[in-house]
Image (tube, rainbow, N blue to C red; front, side, top):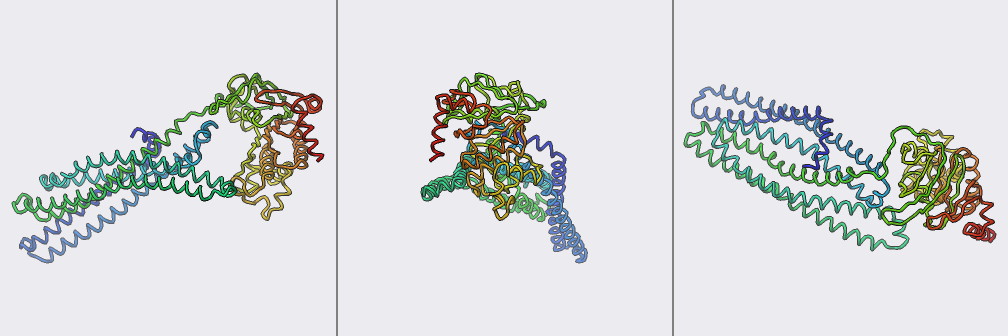
Length: 585
């Protein structure tokens, strides 16, 4: 139960609703337990009439009618209170589920990129859906039925001991046996529940990756091998579910058997005691049989609740693993730190933890506020890493990265990232309208601002050609659009934000040179006071830049301006001449 202690803060938050629910539960059980006593009195009245103790038939009818009305009244009140009990306690479990999902989601937002490199999307989704759902069952039904069972047992046993102590002792003999069985089965359920949840994560991950990469699967014609792999995984998951269900299936038959034994015990022992005069009336036997049957469902729920608790414990343990994860990137300054836009790298070195690859080595350069820097280099030379460091998606291994003359770690992380407009190399769009994808950069942007941003990104004409224009709903990851259109919508999303820092990570690779020229001219016009960094393998993207650095294997091998670099032998000149000749061809 240690793992489930994480939920105590939510129980405290909703303590008033839970307290009201517990009080209603107790009152509902009290009314429910009126019925066995009234039935005993009714049977005793009939026996008394047969034996001549009650001589008037009208007296018998009046007593029976009164008992019937009381039974109906008690049942109605108990039913209403039971409804209110469910509405109170089950609603609390939904509130807790909502809060816990938000907590997990917020933690996902806080965690750094390294976390997502080592954990799969399917597993993340499974923990926030399946695992939280299992935990909700503990916070609602498990608590409700536990209180219900405990209340019913206490009140029923008090009544039973007052009426016939010896018969009560015989009746509850099976309960210790039941406790031992529950303990042994619950341990097996806990172990198998953990395995089931792990396999659900594997299954979710596989399906998520298959759906996301369906175009690749179809392009390579590997539908059948993919289906075969899915079948193997799903069959393994099914077998683990069956193993768990086999253990769970033992609960109800065993409980019903023990309840049946209790009924037979009541009839046999009660009959002998009635014959020997140890109990006052035969109605007591009927009363005890009703008590035993009233306790049938609560006893059955003991096993069910135990199963729920063990599954919730296994699920909450998996949730806690992520909730206890500390982000590698911490916001070390809660005070506001507005960003103006100057950037300086001083002997920066960066090594990726997961691969131990040195992406940058002794890199030094500076960009003043409002200047444009172009970064040119081969694939894997460290260009994108520079942008990741500026956005503080990673921290430098050594050296200093300064923003406005301050170490980047001293900047408020929220202020820093709010000041950045970032266009990634792999343009990511959401399954929403084109307009909302552009407005993602500025939630309260007007219609005119959206259109202006799209025009500056040279994508407006493409958008208006769609039947629904800006209201066109995109497929997953923007699959509705071409590669170049996705890149330009991503650019519009960045520039509508009007940030202090604009970071473009090779985001013009899928557009033609004419469109590239148009976008770059537009950017030059609108970003006069914005620090802009353009990462590209095209020299044409760098010709308007104030400064250019050329990277190779994580080191700066050339730096200067476009005019100076094309006159110096080196990578930049070679690339320029090559692309110039290709353009002429």
